[in-house]
Every structure is written in C-alpha cells, then in structure tokens.
Picture 1 (cartoon, rainbow, N blue to C red):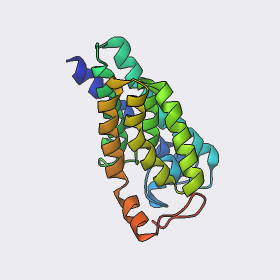
Picture 2: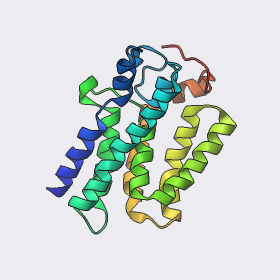
Picture 3: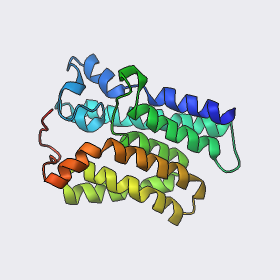
Picture 4: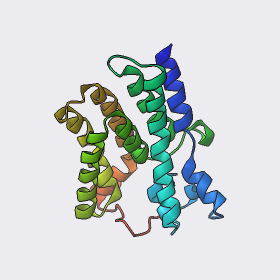
Length: 199
C-alpha cells in the first residue's frame, strides 16, 4: 500500500498545471493557445514574461521533488522504491494532468525536481550537461532530451543505483512528450531559444 500512496501523492501534486495557472493569473490568457501549446516553462517564456517562466520552472520542479521527499520520510523503503514511484508518478501527473483532459507539459522541469530529490549530485551534473547543450544547440528540446537520456547514466556513474529505474521511466515519458519536437528536429524546423513558435 505504501507504493500506492506514494504514486497517488506524486500524481496529484504533479498534475497541478502551474504554467497555466500563473499565466491566467497574470492576465496573459491560456498558454496552451500560443507556441507549442504546452503548459511548461519554455512555452510560458513565449508570453514574454521571464518572471513567470522562472516561477513555472521552480514550481514544476518542486511539485515533483516534494512527493519524493515525503515518500522517503513517510513510507521509507530500503531500496528507495517509494521515492522512485513518487518521482515517476509526479512527472506522469505533469505530462498527463486530469485537470486538462490528460494533456500537460513536456515534463523536463518536473524531471529535474524529481532527480534533485532522488540524487542531488546527479542533478548538479545533469544541470551542467543541460547548460552546455543549450549553449551549443540553442534549442530547448535538444538540451532537455540529451539531459534526461544522460540522467540514468550519471546516476550509475555517481553510484545511485536506486535512482536508475525511475530515471529510465522518466526519460521515456519525457521523450514521448517531445515526439513533436523530435519530428521538427528531423525536418530542421525546431525553433531556437528566443524565437517564436507557431501554434
């Protein structure tokens, strides 16, 4: 039952659509009607409000980190099972939120928050990978995809074996959510950071 509770906590907290809530509260309308249609920070940035985008990143990360930490404290498991389940469920809740007909964001910020709670040294290493990849490519989706794919490898290299299975599952979710981006990348149509994207 502990695993079920951890999954429910992760999914419920992860499903809160902060990007949509913040843009509506700021009078910027429905963020799903601009850019990529995502509720994530990259699309919130396309409103022109960097503060809201930063707040979206922070809140989307926290809503994944919190259930992982709570699961570890309330339902501890020797091999980190409940924490891993909470992490995957939180990212899944963000990407497939029931409040928006099971449509949501791409999952990267939530994945980062989950990684920080599961293995913070691995998160720091992945943050460096993300920054370097973004600097070189100037494409948000490329840096996100490279980082989530690298995360399980980094966890293995830094000796966090309990984090590897959930990170593989999270990477799969994030990759699926980026399928449209992957298609645009293959066609050479993916916008770079700072440019606009057509709906």
